[in-house]
Image (cartoon, rainbow, N blue to C red; front, top):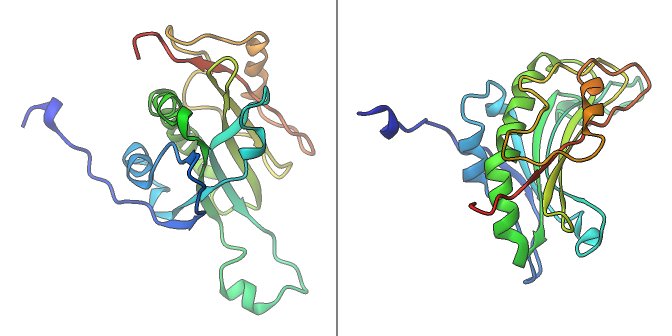
Length: 211
């Protein structure tokens, strides 16, 4: 079989939560596309998928809203914590991917951006931060969509429990991407996050006319 015909094997990630949507909303990605994009990530067997509708209040506004999120969380145990919560794995380390609903008429454009830039960036985030597993705290990446400029915005945040892992890929957009004003400041975000602070790294990707 030629290299171009090879198919990467992957297992569909489990969906832990999925909200029902109104007819004017749609999810830009499904479990199959996410699972295929994250194939080869060592954490993938432990990643749970969530499909939510927490961004709709910003639809149709000038405020960018989340369309895709990746996260890691491990809650510290307390002396007063119920054994039931411990047995249910409340304090176990968890990886997650959350897809947020989008306006149905924008689904195709947002999906194209996510397949081209969002999912590769998300995969790189999981690879860069695999050393977090087992540590207490929270760490995340959020992919937002700006309706006005029709671009994706990437933001990374971390609790004060650790320093952010250096990205596995350059923060500079590809030649087909348009960098937002002030994006040069993102370089500081790759040098680590000091305790009790949150750093946000931002750059944008616009759909090309040929996409």
